[in-house]
Picture 1 (cartoon, rainbow, N blue to C red):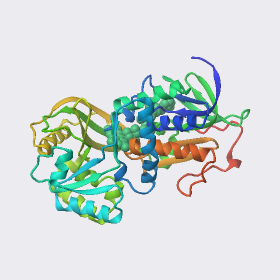
Picture 2: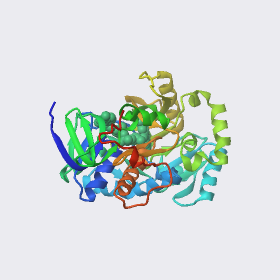
Picture 3: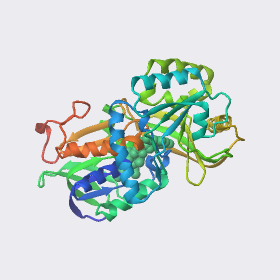
Picture 4: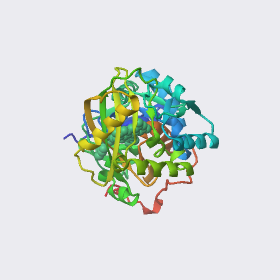
Length: 403
Ligand SMILES: Cc1cc2nc3c(=O)[nH]c(=O)nc-3n(C[C@H](O)[C@H](O)[C@H](O)COP(=O)(O)OP(=O)(O)OC[C@H]3O[C@@H](n4cnc5c(N)ncnc54)[C@H](O)[C@@H]3O)c2cc1C
Protein backbone atom coordinates (compact mmCIF):
# COMPACT_ATOMS: atom_id res chain seq x y z
CA UNK A 1 0.00 0.00 0.00
CA UNK A 2 1.36 3.44 -0.88
CA UNK A 3 1.34 6.14 1.78
CA UNK A 4 1.07 9.01 -0.68
CA UNK A 5 -0.93 12.12 0.08
CA UNK A 6 -2.29 14.21 -2.76
CA UNK A 7 -4.01 17.55 -2.94
CA UNK A 8 -6.84 18.33 -5.29
CA UNK A 9 -9.87 20.56 -5.41
CA UNK A 10 -12.46 17.80 -5.65
CA UNK A 11 -12.28 14.18 -4.53
CA UNK A 12 -14.97 11.93 -5.92
CA UNK A 13 -15.67 8.54 -4.39
CA UNK A 14 -17.35 6.27 -6.91
CA UNK A 15 -16.92 6.15 -10.70
CA UNK A 16 -20.53 5.43 -11.61
CA UNK A 17 -22.67 7.89 -13.51
CA UNK A 18 -23.16 10.13 -10.46
CA UNK A 19 -19.44 10.30 -9.63
CA UNK A 20 -18.57 10.82 -13.29
CA UNK A 21 -21.16 13.60 -13.38
CA UNK A 22 -19.47 15.29 -10.43
CA UNK A 23 -16.05 14.90 -12.05
CA UNK A 24 -17.35 16.37 -15.30
CA UNK A 25 -19.06 19.30 -13.57
CA UNK A 26 -15.91 20.08 -11.57
CA UNK A 27 -13.46 19.66 -14.44
CA UNK A 28 -15.60 21.91 -16.65
CA UNK A 29 -15.05 24.58 -14.02
CA UNK A 30 -11.29 24.13 -14.25
CA UNK A 31 -10.92 22.25 -10.96
CA UNK A 32 -8.45 19.45 -10.21
CA UNK A 33 -10.34 16.22 -9.69
CA UNK A 34 -9.37 12.79 -8.36
CA UNK A 35 -11.88 9.94 -8.65
CA UNK A 36 -11.38 6.82 -6.54
CA UNK A 37 -13.27 3.60 -7.10
CA UNK A 38 -12.87 0.33 -5.27
CA UNK A 39 -13.18 -1.74 -8.45
CA UNK A 40 -10.70 -2.04 -11.27
CA UNK A 41 -13.41 -1.24 -13.80
CA UNK A 42 -16.77 0.50 -13.86
CA UNK A 43 -19.11 -2.36 -13.00
CA UNK A 44 -21.82 -0.90 -10.76
CA UNK A 45 -25.44 -0.04 -11.49
CA UNK A 46 -24.37 2.40 -14.18
CA UNK A 47 -23.45 -0.44 -16.51
CA UNK A 48 -26.19 -2.87 -15.45
CA UNK A 49 -29.26 -0.86 -16.42
CA UNK A 50 -31.45 -0.34 -19.50
CA UNK A 51 -29.57 2.74 -20.66
CA UNK A 52 -32.84 4.59 -20.66
CA UNK A 53 -33.03 8.25 -19.63
CA UNK A 54 -36.75 8.38 -18.93
CA UNK A 55 -36.90 12.14 -18.80
CA UNK A 56 -40.57 12.44 -19.75
CA UNK A 57 -41.72 10.18 -16.92
CA UNK A 58 -40.46 12.42 -14.12
CA UNK A 59 -41.94 15.23 -12.12
CA UNK A 60 -40.73 17.61 -9.38
CA UNK A 61 -37.08 17.38 -8.33
CA UNK A 62 -36.49 14.41 -10.64
CA UNK A 63 -37.79 16.35 -13.63
CA UNK A 64 -35.46 19.22 -12.76
CA UNK A 65 -32.40 16.94 -12.57
CA UNK A 66 -33.51 15.10 -15.72
CA UNK A 67 -33.74 18.33 -17.67
CA UNK A 68 -30.29 19.36 -16.42
CA UNK A 69 -28.98 15.91 -17.40
CA UNK A 70 -30.39 15.81 -20.94
CA UNK A 71 -28.04 18.36 -22.55
CA UNK A 72 -25.13 16.86 -20.58
CA UNK A 73 -25.85 13.42 -22.05
CA UNK A 74 -25.97 14.91 -25.55
CA UNK A 75 -22.74 16.84 -25.01
CA UNK A 76 -20.90 13.88 -23.49
CA UNK A 77 -22.04 11.49 -26.22
CA UNK A 78 -20.74 13.91 -28.83
CA UNK A 79 -17.43 14.60 -27.08
CA UNK A 80 -16.77 11.05 -25.86
CA UNK A 81 -18.12 9.40 -28.99
CA UNK A 82 -20.51 6.84 -27.49
CA UNK A 83 -23.83 5.64 -28.89
CA UNK A 84 -26.86 7.62 -27.76
CA UNK A 85 -30.15 8.28 -29.46
CA UNK A 86 -32.63 11.06 -28.81
CA UNK A 87 -35.53 8.89 -29.85
CA UNK A 88 -38.11 9.35 -27.11
CA UNK A 89 -39.85 6.32 -25.57
CA UNK A 90 -43.13 4.72 -26.34
CA UNK A 91 -45.61 3.55 -23.70
CA UNK A 92 -47.75 0.65 -24.88
CA UNK A 93 -51.17 0.85 -23.21
CA UNK A 94 -53.05 -2.45 -23.09
CA UNK A 95 -56.00 -1.38 -20.98
CA UNK A 96 -58.35 1.62 -20.78
CA UNK A 97 -57.02 2.51 -17.32
CA UNK A 98 -53.48 2.80 -18.74
CA UNK A 99 -54.76 5.15 -21.45
CA UNK A 100 -56.55 7.11 -18.71
CA UNK A 101 -53.30 7.52 -16.75
CA UNK A 102 -51.49 8.78 -19.85
CA UNK A 103 -54.31 11.18 -20.69
CA UNK A 104 -54.39 12.50 -17.12
CA UNK A 105 -50.64 13.10 -17.19
CA UNK A 106 -50.96 14.92 -20.49
CA UNK A 107 -53.88 16.99 -19.21
CA UNK A 108 -51.79 18.01 -16.22
CA UNK A 109 -48.78 18.96 -18.33
CA UNK A 110 -48.68 18.39 -22.08
CA UNK A 111 -44.96 19.08 -22.24
CA UNK A 112 -43.04 16.29 -24.00
CA UNK A 113 -45.88 13.77 -24.14
CA UNK A 114 -47.98 12.90 -27.20
CA UNK A 115 -50.84 10.41 -27.17
CA UNK A 116 -50.55 7.63 -29.74
CA UNK A 117 -53.00 5.35 -31.51
CA UNK A 118 -52.20 1.64 -31.57
CA UNK A 119 -50.88 1.98 -35.08
CA UNK A 120 -48.66 4.92 -34.08
CA UNK A 121 -47.26 2.85 -31.19
CA UNK A 122 -46.48 0.13 -33.74
CA UNK A 123 -44.57 2.67 -35.84
CA UNK A 124 -42.12 2.81 -32.92
CA UNK A 125 -42.10 -0.81 -31.83
CA UNK A 126 -43.56 -4.05 -33.20
CA UNK A 127 -46.04 -4.60 -30.37
CA UNK A 128 -47.93 -7.67 -31.56
CA UNK A 129 -50.50 -8.19 -28.87
CA UNK A 130 -54.13 -7.65 -29.90
CA UNK A 131 -54.74 -6.00 -26.51
CA UNK A 132 -52.79 -2.90 -27.56
CA UNK A 133 -55.13 0.11 -27.37
CA UNK A 134 -52.69 2.94 -27.98
CA UNK A 135 -50.23 4.72 -25.77
CA UNK A 136 -48.00 7.74 -25.65
CA UNK A 137 -44.67 8.99 -26.88
CA UNK A 138 -42.37 10.56 -24.27
CA UNK A 139 -40.58 12.79 -26.69
CA UNK A 140 -37.56 13.92 -24.65
CA UNK A 141 -36.30 10.50 -23.58
CA UNK A 142 -32.83 9.31 -24.52
CA UNK A 143 -31.31 5.88 -24.90
CA UNK A 144 -27.71 4.83 -24.62
CA UNK A 145 -25.77 1.59 -24.26
CA UNK A 146 -24.86 1.52 -20.56
CA UNK A 147 -22.10 -0.97 -21.23
CA UNK A 148 -20.10 1.59 -23.15
CA UNK A 149 -21.34 5.02 -22.06
CA UNK A 150 -19.80 5.27 -18.58
CA UNK A 151 -16.46 3.90 -19.81
CA UNK A 152 -16.39 6.40 -22.66
CA UNK A 153 -17.18 9.26 -20.26
CA UNK A 154 -14.37 8.14 -17.93
CA UNK A 155 -11.91 8.01 -20.85
CA UNK A 156 -12.96 11.50 -21.95
CA UNK A 157 -12.55 12.87 -18.43
CA UNK A 158 -9.14 11.22 -18.11
CA UNK A 159 -8.08 12.92 -21.36
CA UNK A 160 -9.29 16.18 -19.87
CA UNK A 161 -7.08 15.74 -16.81
CA UNK A 162 -9.25 13.93 -14.26
CA UNK A 163 -7.19 11.39 -12.36
CA UNK A 164 -8.79 8.00 -11.79
CA UNK A 165 -7.53 5.75 -9.00
CA UNK A 166 -9.19 2.43 -9.55
CA UNK A 167 -8.96 -0.55 -7.21
CA UNK A 168 -8.80 2.01 -4.44
CA UNK A 169 -11.39 1.94 -1.68
CA UNK A 170 -12.30 5.00 0.32
CA UNK A 171 -12.20 3.97 3.97
CA UNK A 172 -12.81 7.15 5.89
CA UNK A 173 -13.47 10.83 5.46
CA UNK A 174 -12.04 13.12 8.10
CA UNK A 175 -11.56 16.84 8.34
CA UNK A 176 -8.02 18.03 7.61
CA UNK A 177 -6.98 20.66 10.10
CA UNK A 178 -3.96 21.83 8.08
CA UNK A 179 -5.71 22.53 4.78
CA UNK A 180 -9.16 23.14 6.21
CA UNK A 181 -10.43 20.64 3.68
CA UNK A 182 -11.25 16.95 3.75
CA UNK A 183 -8.89 13.98 4.02
CA UNK A 184 -10.15 10.91 2.21
CA UNK A 185 -8.31 7.90 3.57
CA UNK A 186 -8.11 5.15 1.00
CA UNK A 187 -6.50 1.74 0.68
CA UNK A 188 -3.76 3.52 -1.29
CA UNK A 189 -2.96 6.52 0.85
CA UNK A 190 -4.85 9.75 1.43
CA UNK A 191 -6.40 12.31 -0.87
CA UNK A 192 -6.80 15.80 0.54
CA UNK A 193 -9.40 17.90 -1.18
CA UNK A 194 -11.36 21.09 -0.73
CA UNK A 195 -14.56 19.16 -1.34
CA UNK A 196 -15.36 15.46 -1.34
CA UNK A 197 -18.38 13.95 -3.04
CA UNK A 198 -19.49 10.50 -1.97
CA UNK A 199 -21.24 8.82 -4.92
CA UNK A 200 -21.14 5.16 -3.91
CA UNK A 201 -24.79 4.24 -4.59
CA UNK A 202 -26.02 1.48 -2.23
CA UNK A 203 -22.56 1.16 -0.65
CA UNK A 204 -23.44 4.30 1.27
CA UNK A 205 -24.46 1.84 3.99
CA UNK A 206 -20.81 0.76 4.24
CA UNK A 207 -19.02 4.10 3.98
CA UNK A 208 -21.55 6.29 5.80
CA UNK A 209 -23.64 3.71 7.68
CA UNK A 210 -25.23 6.14 10.11
CA UNK A 211 -26.39 8.38 7.29
CA UNK A 212 -27.79 5.43 5.36
CA UNK A 213 -29.63 4.24 8.42
CA UNK A 214 -31.02 7.63 9.43
CA UNK A 215 -32.18 8.25 5.85
CA UNK A 216 -33.75 4.80 5.58
CA UNK A 217 -31.56 3.83 2.63
CA UNK A 218 -31.88 0.19 1.67
CA UNK A 219 -30.75 -1.83 -1.32
CA UNK A 220 -32.98 -2.60 -4.25
CA UNK A 221 -31.80 -5.65 -6.22
CA UNK A 222 -33.05 -6.05 -9.78
CA UNK A 223 -32.86 -9.03 -12.08
CA UNK A 224 -32.29 -8.35 -15.77
CA UNK A 225 -31.76 -10.27 -18.99
CA UNK A 226 -30.34 -9.65 -22.43
CA UNK A 227 -32.21 -11.74 -25.00
CA UNK A 228 -32.43 -12.47 -28.68
CA UNK A 229 -36.05 -12.08 -29.78
CA UNK A 230 -37.55 -12.68 -33.19
CA UNK A 231 -39.07 -9.20 -33.49
CA UNK A 232 -40.98 -8.21 -36.62
CA UNK A 233 -39.07 -4.90 -36.70
CA UNK A 234 -36.45 -3.14 -34.58
CA UNK A 235 -37.49 -1.03 -31.58
CA UNK A 236 -37.09 2.58 -32.63
CA UNK A 237 -37.47 3.63 -28.99
CA UNK A 238 -37.46 2.05 -25.53
CA UNK A 239 -40.83 0.43 -24.75
CA UNK A 240 -42.63 0.96 -21.44
CA UNK A 241 -45.85 -0.67 -20.21
CA UNK A 242 -48.53 -0.08 -17.58
CA UNK A 243 -46.14 -1.53 -15.00
CA UNK A 244 -43.80 1.38 -15.74
CA UNK A 245 -46.63 3.89 -15.30
CA UNK A 246 -47.19 2.46 -11.82
CA UNK A 247 -43.57 3.30 -10.98
CA UNK A 248 -42.48 6.66 -12.45
CA UNK A 249 -43.53 9.80 -10.60
CA UNK A 250 -45.21 11.68 -13.45
CA UNK A 251 -47.79 8.88 -13.66
CA UNK A 252 -47.63 6.89 -10.44
CA UNK A 253 -48.94 9.63 -8.19
CA UNK A 254 -52.02 10.40 -10.30
CA UNK A 255 -55.40 9.26 -8.90
CA UNK A 256 -55.97 7.28 -12.13
CA UNK A 257 -52.84 5.27 -11.39
CA UNK A 258 -54.41 3.88 -8.22
CA UNK A 259 -57.17 2.18 -10.22
CA UNK A 260 -54.65 0.92 -12.77
CA UNK A 261 -52.32 -0.44 -10.10
CA UNK A 262 -55.17 -2.24 -8.31
CA UNK A 263 -56.28 -3.85 -11.56
CA UNK A 264 -52.73 -4.90 -12.51
CA UNK A 265 -52.18 -6.42 -9.08
CA UNK A 266 -55.51 -8.24 -9.14
CA UNK A 267 -54.99 -9.57 -12.65
CA UNK A 268 -51.34 -10.47 -12.23
CA UNK A 269 -50.42 -11.17 -8.60
CA UNK A 270 -47.49 -13.23 -9.92
CA UNK A 271 -45.92 -10.18 -11.60
CA UNK A 272 -46.87 -7.88 -8.71
CA UNK A 273 -45.19 -10.26 -6.26
CA UNK A 274 -41.82 -9.73 -7.95
CA UNK A 275 -42.48 -6.00 -8.33
CA UNK A 276 -42.13 -6.02 -12.10
CA UNK A 277 -41.35 -3.06 -14.31
CA UNK A 278 -41.97 -4.61 -17.70
CA UNK A 279 -39.90 -2.60 -20.16
CA UNK A 280 -37.47 -3.02 -23.05
CA UNK A 281 -34.56 -1.34 -24.74
CA UNK A 282 -32.81 -2.60 -27.84
CA UNK A 283 -29.06 -2.33 -28.36
CA UNK A 284 -27.48 -1.49 -31.72
CA UNK A 285 -26.62 -5.20 -32.16
CA UNK A 286 -30.34 -6.04 -32.11
CA UNK A 287 -30.41 -7.77 -28.72
CA UNK A 288 -32.98 -6.68 -26.16
CA UNK A 289 -32.64 -5.72 -22.52
CA UNK A 290 -35.62 -7.22 -20.71
CA UNK A 291 -36.56 -6.36 -17.18
CA UNK A 292 -36.99 -6.18 -14.44
CA UNK A 293 -37.90 -7.41 -10.98
CA UNK A 294 -37.23 -5.62 -7.68
CA UNK A 295 -36.41 -6.81 -4.16
CA UNK A 296 -35.87 -4.22 -1.45
CA UNK A 297 -33.97 -5.09 1.72
CA UNK A 298 -30.87 -4.01 3.64
CA UNK A 299 -29.20 -7.21 2.37
CA UNK A 300 -30.99 -8.67 -0.67
CA UNK A 301 -30.06 -12.25 -1.43
CA UNK A 302 -27.94 -12.98 -4.50
CA UNK A 303 -30.15 -15.79 -5.80
CA UNK A 304 -32.22 -15.07 -8.88
CA UNK A 305 -35.56 -16.89 -9.02
CA UNK A 306 -35.90 -18.59 -12.37
CA UNK A 307 -39.71 -18.47 -12.11
CA UNK A 308 -39.67 -14.66 -12.15
CA UNK A 309 -37.40 -14.61 -15.21
CA UNK A 310 -39.65 -17.10 -16.95
CA UNK A 311 -42.65 -14.85 -16.32
CA UNK A 312 -40.83 -11.94 -17.93
CA UNK A 313 -39.95 -14.06 -20.96
CA UNK A 314 -43.57 -15.15 -21.35
CA UNK A 315 -44.72 -11.54 -21.08
CA UNK A 316 -42.18 -10.53 -23.71
CA UNK A 317 -43.44 -13.21 -26.09
CA UNK A 318 -47.03 -12.09 -25.50
CA UNK A 319 -46.32 -8.34 -25.90
CA UNK A 320 -44.43 -8.66 -29.16
CA UNK A 321 -46.27 -11.72 -30.49
CA UNK A 322 -43.04 -13.70 -30.86
CA UNK A 323 -41.78 -17.11 -29.69
CA UNK A 324 -40.10 -17.25 -26.28
CA UNK A 325 -36.86 -15.23 -26.62
CA UNK A 326 -33.46 -16.86 -26.16
CA UNK A 327 -31.66 -15.67 -23.06
CA UNK A 328 -28.09 -14.55 -23.75
CA UNK A 329 -27.21 -13.15 -20.32
CA UNK A 330 -28.71 -12.65 -16.87
CA UNK A 331 -27.47 -10.39 -14.11
CA UNK A 332 -28.42 -8.62 -10.94
CA UNK A 333 -28.01 -4.89 -10.43
CA UNK A 334 -28.47 -2.96 -7.21
CA UNK A 335 -29.37 0.63 -6.48
CA UNK A 336 -29.85 2.60 -3.28
CA UNK A 337 -33.50 2.80 -2.32
CA UNK A 338 -34.62 5.58 -0.02
CA UNK A 339 -37.77 7.20 1.22
CA UNK A 340 -37.24 10.09 -1.23
CA UNK A 341 -36.07 9.89 -4.82
CA UNK A 342 -32.68 11.46 -4.03
CA UNK A 343 -30.23 11.72 -1.21
CA UNK A 344 -28.18 14.92 -1.26
CA UNK A 345 -26.70 15.56 2.12
CA UNK A 346 -23.83 17.76 3.24
CA UNK A 347 -22.62 15.38 5.93
CA UNK A 348 -19.89 17.73 7.07
CA UNK A 349 -18.36 20.94 5.76
CA UNK A 350 -17.03 20.14 2.30
CA UNK A 351 -18.41 16.58 2.23
CA UNK A 352 -21.52 15.90 0.17
CA UNK A 353 -23.18 12.49 -0.16
CA UNK A 354 -25.18 12.03 -3.35
CA UNK A 355 -27.39 9.22 -4.56
CA UNK A 356 -30.37 8.62 -6.75
CA UNK A 357 -32.39 6.65 -4.22
CA UNK A 358 -34.77 5.16 -6.71
CA UNK A 359 -34.01 3.60 -10.07
CA UNK A 360 -33.58 6.78 -12.10
CA UNK A 361 -29.87 7.51 -11.79
CA UNK A 362 -29.24 7.24 -15.53
CA UNK A 363 -32.02 9.76 -16.09
CA UNK A 364 -31.12 12.20 -13.33
CA UNK A 365 -27.59 11.39 -12.09
CA UNK A 366 -25.74 13.85 -14.31
CA UNK A 367 -28.19 16.60 -13.32
CA UNK A 368 -28.00 15.72 -9.63
CA UNK A 369 -24.20 15.93 -9.85
CA UNK A 370 -24.18 19.20 -11.80
CA UNK A 371 -26.54 20.77 -9.30
CA UNK A 372 -24.55 19.52 -6.30
CA UNK A 373 -21.24 20.86 -7.62
CA UNK A 374 -22.80 24.23 -8.40
CA UNK A 375 -24.21 24.44 -4.89
CA UNK A 376 -20.96 23.34 -3.23
CA UNK A 377 -19.13 26.10 -5.09
CA UNK A 378 -21.72 28.64 -4.03
CA UNK A 379 -23.13 29.15 -7.51
CA UNK A 380 -26.66 28.39 -6.36
CA UNK A 381 -28.52 29.22 -3.20
CA UNK A 382 -28.78 26.51 -0.59
CA UNK A 383 -31.81 24.35 -1.17
CA UNK A 384 -34.77 24.50 1.11
CA UNK A 385 -35.23 20.76 0.79
CA UNK A 386 -33.36 17.79 2.03
CA UNK A 387 -29.82 19.15 2.22
CA UNK A 388 -28.75 20.15 5.68
CA UNK A 389 -25.39 21.44 6.75
CA UNK A 390 -23.91 20.52 10.07
CA UNK A 391 -23.35 23.37 12.43
CA UNK A 392 -19.71 24.54 12.21
CA UNK A 393 -19.56 24.28 15.99
CA UNK A 394 -20.05 20.52 15.74
CA UNK A 395 -16.72 20.12 13.98
CA UNK A 396 -13.55 19.11 15.75
CA UNK A 397 -10.01 19.22 14.36
CA UNK A 398 -9.98 15.66 13.06
CA UNK A 399 -13.58 14.76 12.99
CA UNK A 400 -14.32 11.40 11.43
CA UNK A 401 -17.40 11.74 9.25
CA UNK A 402 -17.61 8.07 8.43
CA UNK A 403 -17.80 6.56 11.88
C1 LIG B 1 -31.04 -3.33 -13.32
C2 LIG B 1 -31.12 -1.83 -13.25
C3 LIG B 1 -31.82 -1.12 -14.22
C4 LIG B 1 -31.89 0.26 -14.17
N1 LIG B 1 -32.46 0.94 -15.20
C5 LIG B 1 -32.40 2.29 -15.21
C6 LIG B 1 -32.88 3.02 -16.32
O1 LIG B 1 -33.30 2.47 -17.34
N2 LIG B 1 -32.89 4.38 -16.25
C7 LIG B 1 -32.40 5.03 -15.16
O2 LIG B 1 -32.46 6.25 -15.12
N3 LIG B 1 -31.84 4.37 -14.13
C8 LIG B 1 -31.84 3.02 -14.13
N4 LIG B 1 -31.30 2.34 -13.09
C9 LIG B 1 -30.71 3.08 -11.98
C10 LIG B 1 -29.31 3.56 -12.31
O3 LIG B 1 -28.58 2.56 -12.97
C11 LIG B 1 -28.61 3.97 -11.01
O4 LIG B 1 -29.45 4.88 -10.31
C12 LIG B 1 -27.29 4.66 -11.30
O5 LIG B 1 -26.50 3.90 -12.18
C13 LIG B 1 -26.54 4.89 -9.99
O6 LIG B 1 -25.31 5.49 -10.32
P1 LIG B 1 -24.20 5.64 -9.21
O7 LIG B 1 -23.06 6.34 -9.81
O8 LIG B 1 -24.82 6.24 -7.99
O9 LIG B 1 -23.85 4.13 -8.78
P2 LIG B 1 -22.88 3.02 -9.40
O10 LIG B 1 -22.89 3.01 -10.85
O11 LIG B 1 -23.26 1.74 -8.70
O12 LIG B 1 -21.45 3.51 -8.94
C14 LIG B 1 -21.04 3.52 -7.58
C15 LIG B 1 -19.55 3.25 -7.56
O13 LIG B 1 -19.06 3.44 -6.25
C16 LIG B 1 -17.99 2.53 -6.05
N5 LIG B 1 -17.76 2.41 -4.60
C17 LIG B 1 -18.60 1.96 -3.65
N6 LIG B 1 -18.06 2.06 -2.45
C18 LIG B 1 -16.81 2.58 -2.62
C19 LIG B 1 -15.75 2.93 -1.73
N7 LIG B 1 -15.84 2.78 -0.41
N8 LIG B 1 -14.59 3.42 -2.26
C20 LIG B 1 -14.47 3.58 -3.60
N9 LIG B 1 -15.46 3.28 -4.48
C21 LIG B 1 -16.62 2.80 -3.99
C22 LIG B 1 -18.48 1.26 -6.71
O14 LIG B 1 -17.41 0.40 -7.03
C23 LIG B 1 -19.19 1.83 -7.95
O15 LIG B 1 -18.33 1.85 -9.08
C24 LIG B 1 -31.26 0.94 -13.11
C25 LIG B 1 -30.55 0.24 -12.14
C26 LIG B 1 -30.46 -1.14 -12.21
C27 LIG B 1 -29.68 -1.86 -11.15
